[in-house]
Length: 192
Image (cartoon, rainbow, N blue to C red; front, side, top):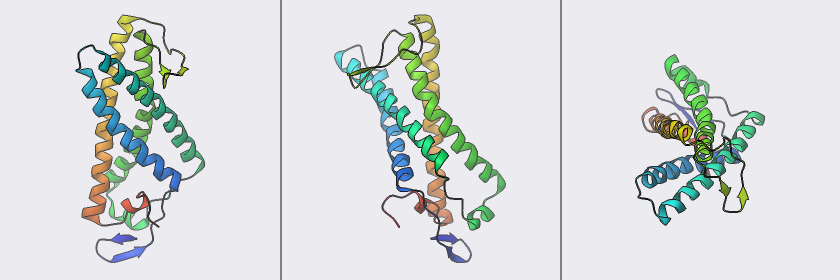
């Protein structure tokens, strides 16, 4: 239910589709797990564990990229529900702009982070064999100097993705606990 802070419940908020909700939470969880694993494995000494984690990280990155393509295709063919009028009226214009900018940047980074990681892996001379079964083409020819230039871009873009995801979560929680406007309920699984 959409709630106006001053007048109480006003209308039922339109929900996202079940697939959009599933992809939202799956990609959110993947961001958290992959970032945590990436930070952890980067500081490990060279070992079989580090090699295994790097391979898993690359497999997860390619899977994340595939899910991002699916999410973008779904979004392009299934218009998301509009923000309820009570929320649009209550939000200052800078928050509306930040809302849209954050979503666009998140989508950009959904593709940039794994593609930069794939380019880094290719340039470093480590091909990606998805789940150890499907060899994927290299995006670049092996070039150690180029790999060293790309590596920090992958790290910075991953930090940017996590930072924007954190901002997204903070805004959703603000709408839920402070504004109490029902916005978060549109994306919660299992609710009608």
